[in-house]
Length: 186
Image (cartoon, rainbow, N blue to C red; front, side, top):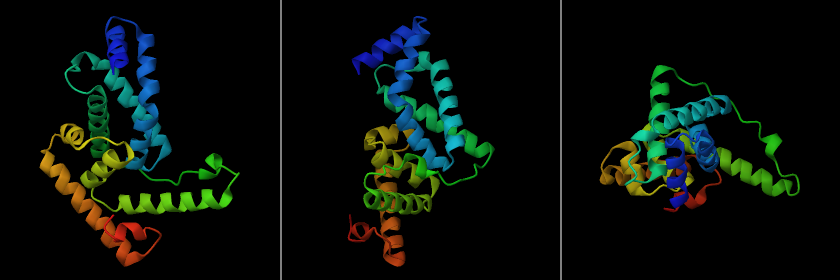
């Protein structure tokens, strides 16, 4: 965290190269979150790039009392939501054959299938619930940070998360699949 503050100070002092450290620290997590929102790798890449530009331009507005990662996610997610309102993103399947670990094909297949089913399950949720699930479980963002990011009360975050998990459990109970642990109240 202290290193982040140093990078921010360096960027604000005119050292544009210091911003590369911030990008390298957050690019993969941010891309994963936005990819799950858009379901399109190219759109996700574009939105991540746009979000980092927006963060850079607004870095002087960051309040150092709060968590930088929360602020960064808030700027990025708000940007994505603005873009979603402007146009609907098309979804395409990710070519996972390029990232497959061929050493253990059975394990890889099962992980891919479980991941696909989980992605489909999450994609059935309303946008706000989907975002809370992604932030909490994929990016491991705290309830408090989600509350700040989405500008909603902490109780709303908890309620939406509970409803989202309940909907997912019901979907699993009705449709089967490999997520039997969810249907047991997990």
